[in-house]
Image (cartoon, rainbow, N blue to C red; front, top):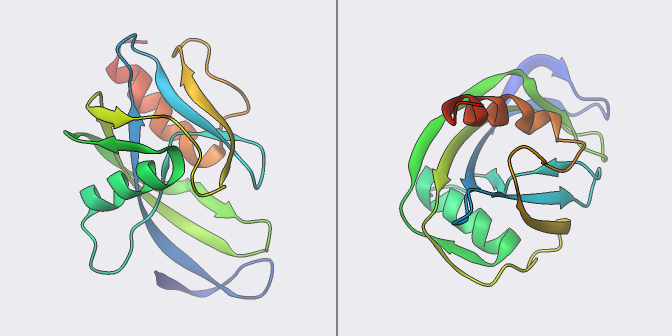
Length: 151
């Protein structure tokens, strides 16, 4: 993570640029996988920070496996998203300036289950009835996904 010079988070630590990788997983009905975050109660698609020496694709797949128990295969790039809408202050006061590389996939196996404890609830939801509130860190990307689907 790169430090943002001269800007401090609410807890006094430097704001960092955080590169994330995410996957909007679709099931055979066209529903998408959403999870309720344990830290703030908002809903998001699975994803997270890329680790050192990890490819973006491997990081996105790892996050879905860790958070939801699903192994994802083929990926289609939705886009690379950044800007103030993706900034986030965590409950501990750390602040990140997010860059999210988002994929879409219908190619997955496994049983949906929370493995790492980050999610309170999860499931596949129709795109016209997504659970609320949506995480502000994911709203821009979900709008792009819906626009691609013609909605």
